[in-house]
Amino acid sequence: VSEAQLNNGIEAQCRARGLRLTGQRRLIAQLITEATDHPDILELHRRARVSDPRIALSTVYRTLNKLEGAGIVVSHNFRGGPSRYELASKSCHDHLIDVQTGAVLDFQDRRVDRAIEKIARALGFEVVDHRLEVHVIPSRAL
Ligand SMILES: [Zn+2]
Image 1 (cartoon, protein in one colour):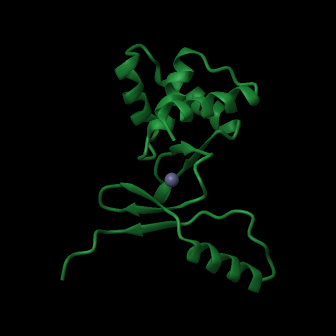
Image 2: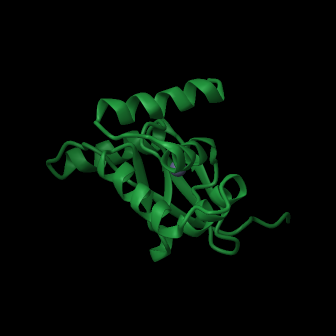
């Protein structure tokens, strides 16, 4: 998927939800689309200022709230930390969080999904969604 397609994706989603994407909002949407590291608001503000030095933190804050409210972006509070953002349209995945560096790695494993579904069924439920956050440190070579 090219960057242009991704950008069209978020623009189309915003239009479909009646959210106008102009100027600074578009820049923030683009930064989230391009990010692979689940940036927090301060990091998004820092990146936005590279393209638009006058962009205010409050603009980033309001835009993130609108995008999240529209279901276009999701936030995570890994280990109770600040909200970190990614596109909601990214395929269902779970997260590994390096507790030393704060780095976040996406992963997807059907065995995990199946295990969670099995546990829920055994307790009399159907899974509609899940969030799994695994805290890790780098394994040392033995
Ligand atoms: Zn993720």
